[in-house]
Image (cartoon, rainbow, N blue to C red; front, side, top):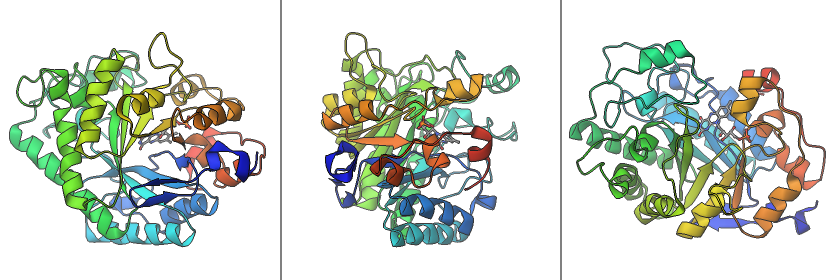
Length: 380
Ligand SMILES: Cc1cc2nc3c(=O)[nH]c(=O)nc-3n(C[C@H](O)[C@H](O)[C@H](O)COP(=O)(O)O)c2cc1C
C-alpha cells in the first residue's frame, strides 16, 4: 500500500479542518492528568501520534465545567487556568508536529460513580433518575447493585446548567487552539441516556417521543455551535450499545436512527462518529451497511467508523476473554473507505500499540500486536 493508491491516505476537509488522511486516533481515557491538569507527558503522548502521521487526534474524554461531569480526578478538565494552560501546550506540540487535535467533551450522566466511589449524597445527572436496565454489562454485580437505585430526575434547571457547561468548555477549547470539538454522545453516558428510551422516560420537551429524545443532545450541539461560531467542525460520537447493556439500542430501525441523527446534523454536527465494536459489522438486518455507512446514508454528513481495526476481538470481548489476535483487515477497510461507505476510520488500541501507526500503514508494514498490560498502563 502506498500513499497514492490508498483510500486511507486521501485528504479531507471539514469546515476549517484540513486532514491529510482518513486515520483518526479514537478517544481513549488515560487518567494521567493529576488534578485534571494535562502535563508534558500527556502533550508528548499526543505529539508522538501526530509525528507518526495520524490525520486527526481525538483526545481522551475531557471533563466539562459542571460538578457532576466526570467522577475521576485524573481525567483532564476543560476548565480552570492550569488545565487550559496544559491543553495549550498539548495543542501547540501537536500542531508543531503537523497534526490536528480535537477534545472529546464528556459528561458521564447516569454512570457517575462507576469510576470512583463517590459521595452518595450527590445527585448524578440522569434524565429520569434511572441508571438503565442492566443487561450484558462488564460492570461487576456489586457496582450495578450500588448504582441501580433511582435518583431524582434532572430538573429543567439541571438541564439548562449542563447545556451551558458544555458551551463554556467548548468555547474554552476553541480559545486554547483546538481544531474542532468532539462530543461523547455514546456508551450510556449523559447525552446517550437522553436518546435511550430505557433511561429517558420523560414526558416534557426532553422526552416521550423519539424526536423529543433527540432534543437535549441537539440543544447541547446548538449551544456549542453558537459558542464557537461556524469555523470549527463538531464531531459527535453515538452508539447503539450501552455500558449498562451491550445489546441495547437507541434505534430499532434505520428510520428511527435517521430521526435521531438528522436532529444532530440540523443542530450543527458535521461528523457522525458511529461507535461500534467492529467497523465492518452490519447495523441492521438485510443490508451489509455498517453503522457508519447508515449514518452517512441517512444524513449525508461526513461519517466515521471505528472498531477492531487490525484486531480479531472487540475491546469488550478482549477484556472479558483476555488477549486479541492480530487480524489483517486492511483490505476490508480500503474497500469500504474506497467506496465512500464512510469517510474516516477511528482506531483505538493500535494507536496505543504503535504511535507511528499511520506511517506503518502507509509503508505497508506489519500490523502491531496489542498487549493490554503493556500498552494501556502507561503513556508511551
Ligand atoms: C483504554 C481505552 C479507553 C477508552 N476511553 C474512551 C473514551 O474516553 N471515550 C470514548 O468515546 N471511547 C473510549 N474508548 C473506546 C475507543 O475510542 C474505541 O471506540 C474502541 O477502543 C474500539 O476501537 P479499537 O477496536 O480500535 O480499539 C476507549 C478504549 C480504550 C481501549
